[in-house]
Length: 476
Image (cartoon, rainbow, N blue to C red; front, side, top):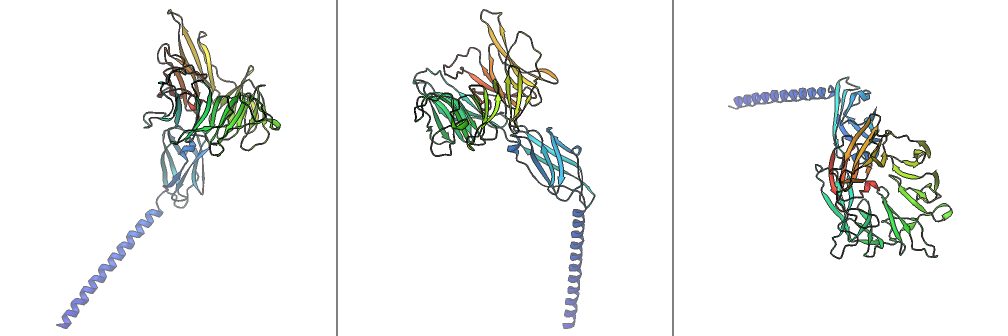
């Protein structure tokens, strides 16, 4: 009995050992096959990185695609970006780097494909694929409700925040309101407004997010205008006329700036050469900086930084500041002799001939904006005298190397465009439209009843959305 039992145990042990060996061999073979497959597979994407929020604000932003193994060099012909966007490509130890030479579009889904990628070690082909989305932009407008002289039942004026398209899911939100708002500026979650009392006297009011409204100290009795902000630096500036300093000197076209993060709650005067007062008729923040371009009463332009201090840099005399080209620090100025550009990074001044639209001589030219490619966008007004009362309407035309095309026309007879401006990335126009039969609201900085702001795609002419109000912050 014992011998038969021992024999049975030995047989079971041999079967177990054979099964174990077979299992180990099978696992080893499987691991070998998988390892070989991994080694013999062509390159694929391991990770990717891009700052999409920055890519809609300025050119030169990078998308880095990291493959799962070293790859051979590629060229731009191996890369596709949909929708199309200009780029340069390079390969190094970090992977494939796409540098976008322009700014990307707001609220857009991008697809990047790199084909014909070859592994350095394996020589096998593969591909890299990556999708990303850029954020929508938020535009702020001023909705005035009732005239400046309206009584105590007048509804409050409002600062509104809106997305560019309804499809983006962004509605229109009220971020600030006061009985009478002359002008506003926004930087991050800080909103500053020139608010008027019943007598028309102005003061500065500030709110951070949903916090209570606070006052900003400015000279008593002064007239405030040209309120602007630098969102990147978190600064605000305003022109001041009237009121006096501690010595009794009356402010005349003085420029004041203030930082909401500084606890003094005071706006400080910007001074010129040798600490002397600087009289300013127009000014702008330089995009993406705390620096300011200011135009004196003698038409002299100055570049200065109120945070860094130091003496201003003179930029020469010019009749008009027309703003900045999208995505950089190139200032556009105008003189009777023509339009010029000033590269503020170098100080270089260059003539800037603009394409001119072919139009009916009966049209009256208005606001003009320069484009990066030497083209121009201009408003033209048309007056119809065929009826008892003249009817005014407007059209916006684009002129470039390909000719003249109509971009926008006021929607109904009698409605007209007040002004327009380019979005910071050059993709859209923000167009202020005055409805037919609208009445002036009586403010010192006048608006009209039932004004709207429309967002017009510069490439297609499509109106993606129209929102209540005017003075979009793109235009300040």
